[in-house]
Length: 148
Length: 346
Image (cartoon, rainbow over all chains, first blue to last red; front, side, top):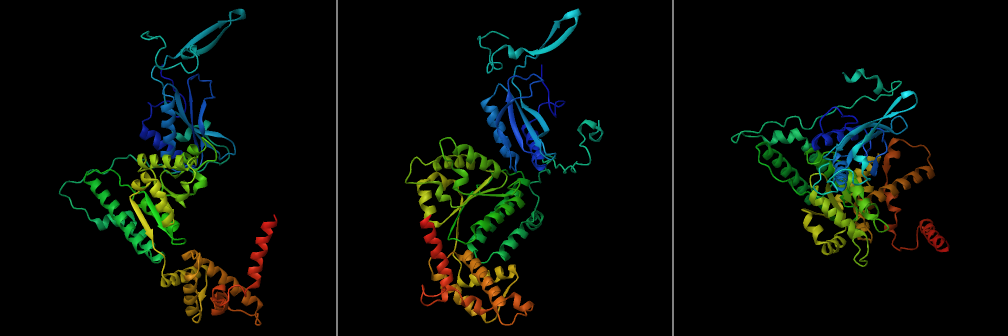
């Protein structure tokens, strides 16, 4: 299941040129950008790992792309997203946030139903990927040759 | 759904800044020219506005003939490359990393700033800003501190010019565990792989830069343009003094001219002469003396001419005209001596 979230969730994955153009738009607005990654893509997981600090004082998209590529290389099996912060309102406001890398097999989510008192049903979603420990959730299966 | 009709994204109370124009940079490149087409280079030149930059360089900077010649060459190369690209002749982007060597105050930083503007006009740099750094900004203090620091500076300079002042400090030959070499390695890597993202300009005094390049041959070979800034002649220094005074709203009196010339010649012969920077200091000091002369003068009524004219006396009071160094200007010397002993006591 292809996970979508953030600003361009309705679009197909952005190409490098499109990502560069979006970064350029952010920098023109004076928004610093930051790179984050995770292997727990639950929609309620807002705390992704930070790839370095937010990048202030940059003038050109090439500097941000350098970090995006570094993060992709270091974590090829993780989701990577870019956030742009707008400090205009005096607080950290996410102006733009979009996924720039997704792992190849995306197993998706399981819907769990819990029956409580009076046969009331509560629902929760669990990523199939999070059944495995952190760091082994995506990428090649630990048991060689065994399809997942 | 139109962008205007999204209540969830509206900012309260008119705090919304006007959205800047987005210029898509991949909107259809102009079609290639036919092989037999003819392009007017003069029209191309005026379209880029590069002539304005070159003319400003020529008129605003005194002397520096070899520097101006090299900059004109670079501008011509970029223009020809652009025109070649219109015919579909693709070439790798030229190597534009530079090294400016020359004495103090010969205009290295000023030219670097102009260079950033020029390369931006020619479409070689996307932003055309200048990031000036020294060893402190690149080299860290402990293990693992240098690489992120250097990378940070490089990221800030992307799209513009990274100007490394006193670059020879990066390498300290006497200390092989110095972190400077780590910084140089990262610089070399970026200079090679991100040639079209950032232009690195090293600056320093000729002798020290020679030593620096001898111990870092990789750096020397990756820099295509080694530009030497000649020292100014007395004539050029006089012109510079004129312009500096003019910018501050002063003129030299007619009888001050020969004195100014004499002053510059004496100053050039003295140790630690720093070309244009010394001239700037001389003008500043003449300004101080002129103010003092006006305030302490017997006639307290001044007119516009008196306020803007630097007289010969303002220059003659300088220490360089003192035949017996060490006997006059007790105030200035006294202050310097007091400061010296003060630091020793502390």
